[in-house]
Length: 390
Image (tube, rainbow, N blue to C red; front, side):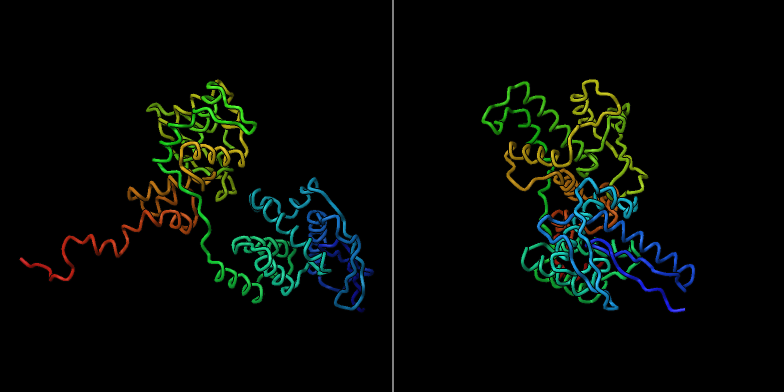
């Protein structure tokens, strides 16, 4: 019996296999094909947020030469839950959002050029990444995330990953060599910077409409800023971790210090949790802003973007200049720890890093005086002199 003819239909960013007759393959093959079919449908429904100016019907030709018409289904962000059916809980919510955004960008690009996206061809992916680098000026790190999103969709659909092709890898390596691998680093909010913020946080500021805060309003806002910066430094918090904290996550200890439970983080997607030390000064700052808030209430009631903005404004008010962000308290504490001699393994534990790459990058200035050249010049005698013998 000849194999059943397959006609490919579906959305602009994928195809659905519909068989006209019984298949002669093994049961496992049938199940695999059914999985790919369902997975492709998920990709279509979840990622076809195509710009309205794109054509509504696009012709494509499959490998057998049969022409199929692919309908571009225009969906909105309210359909984002469909992609969650594909991604499930395997990756963190932030990664899901990043992958979804990157995948939608690729779909938009490919549909405009009448290229297939599921499966995508390596030469098309390579052209897409090169265009983003060469014409749009996107950084190598952004290109790597885009490639990871494309790879994730194909791997989830049990399709050949186009990003593993040598052409795509060459594009990523070439972009890194041209632009450099180093990324712009947020300024560290060190202990000295914390002192400057603490001294100025409660000063009245001018609002966007030119009005100056009242002394009472400035004091309330300033106390929150101080508690926010202190807690993010003590616990080396990421902004997403800080935004998720509730008062039930903070426990006071008789000596005046505290313990903070970080329930879930970027490097702990399974939610094993981590308990970190909170200084007595920070516990006092937190007590000054709680005002009887219930345990289930979020500590700062701020989203990640608002946290970053408050830190940036607090640093500017303290005369620290630009370059500060929500990542600055974490970077600054890493630098302070390296400065007093904390070694990299302990630093990784404190900051909940799985890889030494980022903490080593943040603290490279602080650890330079412990390198080989510094040891040469700090040697107790001239190394050219022969060692003295008794």
